[in-house]
Every structure is written in C-alpha cells, then in structure tokens.
View 1 (cartoon, helix red, strand yellow):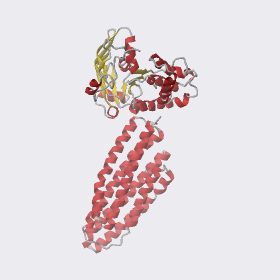
View 2 (cartoon, chains in turn orange, red):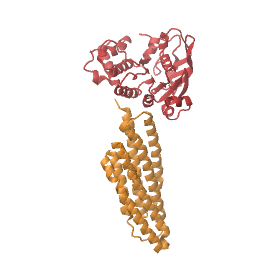
View 3 (tube, chains in turn red, blue):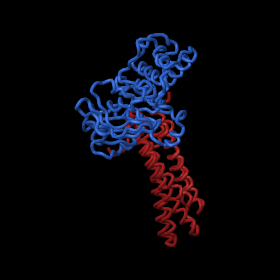
View 4 (cartoon, chains in turn yellow, blue):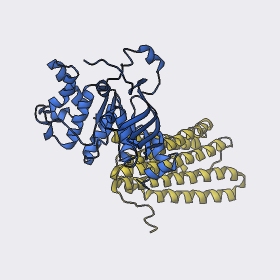
Length: 218
Length: 272
C-alpha cells in the first residue's frame, strides 16, 4: 500500500530541487555571460526566469494543498520551509536576471580594464547557493549553520568592489556607465549570497525546529 | 442467480454506454427524503464521476449519511421513509420498481463506521458474499479472497491466520477486512460511512491510503466528520447543512476558497 501523503511531500521536495537546479544554472550562466561578454547567453538567462517564476507558483499551490491535509511535525516544517525556499530561489533567479541584463549591456560597450575580483565574489556566492541546497537535500543542519557566516565574506567583498569602482569612476569619468553596471552586478551577487543564507536558515529550522533568523539582532 | 437489472455498461448496453461516454456514474436529481413528515433532504442534485473519491461533509444531522444510504437503498429498511426525485447509476434509475435491490447492493457496496465482521473466520468473512453470489469453486474462492485481502492491504497480516476468528483482529484490521468483504464481490461503487472515525491515527492513515489505492478501480463516496481526512483523500467534496446541499466542488477549492460563506464557516471550524 502506497503512503500517499508521504508521496505528496516527496513530490513537493522533488519539485523544489528541480527549481533549485534552474536557479543555480541561471546564476552560473549570468556570471559566465558577464565575465565572457556573452550577449546571447545573457538573453537566454533572462528568458529562463519565467521558468523559475512558474516553479514558485506551482510549489506554493502544492504546499497549500498539502497544508489542507494537516501535515504535522517535520512534514509541517517541510511544507512551510518549501514555500520560503522557493521564494528565495525565485529571488535568486531575479538577481541572475539583473546580472544578465548588465552582462547584455556591458557586452555592447567597449571593454574597460579594471582590476576587479568579481569572479572570486561570484564563486563565493555560487558556492553558498550550492551548499545551501546540498544542506537541504541531505537535511544537514550542521552544514547549513556552517555556511551562514560566509555571507559576511561576500558582503565585505561587495564593499571593497564598490569602493574600488567609485574610485575608478572618479579617476575615469568616461567609464562611469560601465562601472555602474559592475556595481549593480556585484550587488546582485551580494543579494544572492543573502538568499543562500536565508535558505540555510530555513534548513536549520527544518532539521532542528529552531528559528535562527535575526539571531544576532535579538 | 438474480438477474442483473442494472447492467454493466461495457457488456449488455454497449449502445447506451456509447451515448454515456463522459457522463457521471451517479446522478442525484432533485432528491428530497422524508422521515414521516420531517424532511431530511431538500432537493439535492449532484453528479459524481467514475473512479473518483467524493466526500460528504457537514455537521451532525445535515443529511450526509441519509443521502449516502440512498445510493444503495439502505433507507428502504426504515419505516416511513419517502424519497422524491431520481437517483441514477450508470444511467439507470435505482428506485425503478424493477430494480433488484440485492443486485443493486452488490454493485454499490458499503462500509460502516463500526467494523462489523461476521463472527466467523477471516476467510469466511470474505467468502460469504462470494458464495451468496454463486461462487462455489474452492480454488476460485481462494483466489478471489487473496485478491481482495491484497487489495485491502490486509493479506500480509492475515495470510497465516485465514481460518482464525475475524473478531481477534485489531479494529483497523477488522475495518480493512470489511473493505475486503465489500470489494470481493467487485462492486463499482463503495459507500463509506465514517469508516475511520473509531480508529487510532495509524489505522486511520492505513484506511486513507487504502481508499486512495482503491479509487484506481472503484468509485468511492465517503461520509466523514474529519475535514482534513476529506482533504487528504477526496477529489471532490459536498457540504451539507440541515438537509441542503450548500456547496459541491473540487476538494481543493472547497478547502482553500469555498464559494459559500456557510462552507467557509464550517471548514474553518466556526460552527458544527
């Protein structure tokens, strides 16, 4: 005899994982488009955002239906966490789209030589997304907790990049338009890391039933 | 054997079946039911499709069990009952004077709130209805009994005690035995009147999973007081209140966005 309710929960989990893979792919490709000045790839990332949006709607619908069936304990947390994770993934998709837009515009401008360690920042943000999703897959609260402090590293890099770009703009006013694109792209990477952190916090709630959001502020 | 007066669509009335493609299996049309002068059901109209689970919900006394019992004419057993309107199954009026009620109840099985196994062995409980309907051959009986117990997810638990008393089974097992007994004679429709209300959560979960498995083969109408249960197992839900059908629709809609305020109030626990 099939356990139909558990099957519904598993279907929700699988759908979330497929959505996550789309979001991860979008970020990867947006960064690649930015670094390699790949105009076509940037356009593709923007088009793929609709797919991620649709996943968010479908996951919410599945979750609401499961909530009417009165899930309890871990299942209840999984359903509510799935809704929050999908919202974070949707926003990660939005940030990827923003990066892709900047990549598209930058690809149309002559290349400017600025010493920026954006690839490093992108790698850190991408690794955070990947590790947050891995912690969800493996229900690994320790791994989720471990990645949360890495957000600070990305924040610091964003500040450094921002300062460097402001300085560059002051010294080279002809590159302002180009530098603004880089500032926005860096900010999007910083937001992606924030969403990865949010996902990790939800994984901790899922596994340990402990709400660690805003812990430092309280 | 009694003549089948509500023929199987696929065999005896192929032409009718062709016309009825996509038609609901059960059509309740403007049904009112009176216990003496008291009107328990008021102009109920409902169409239920084949191989779906329909839940009847509503507060006590709303008429949901009364309507359920109309579907296999169990109310015929009560004095002073009068029914107006029509109930058709497979396009045939089950209240037509020519209908063989025994045959109707073979096609429309029923499982009650309280499990009611016969004081016989597990095997004999399932064999009883089959013998009554003319199946005598031992190997055929054995095969059908195993199939029914498999379908009701009870086989693994009772296969080594088929000849022990059914009264020695747990409450949940007894209820699944009653389901096995009902499905053994291969009905098209199974009516369930609060089949899990007397069971613990584990036994309830097994009954619910069983219902979802059975809907691949049977059309199920279930009365339940447990709204989450209705949400878990049914495809469509009908909400009744003081003999009226207030709202009928997809279970998803009834429990997330009902059209009627009375439905909203009831499913939200504001009354009932």
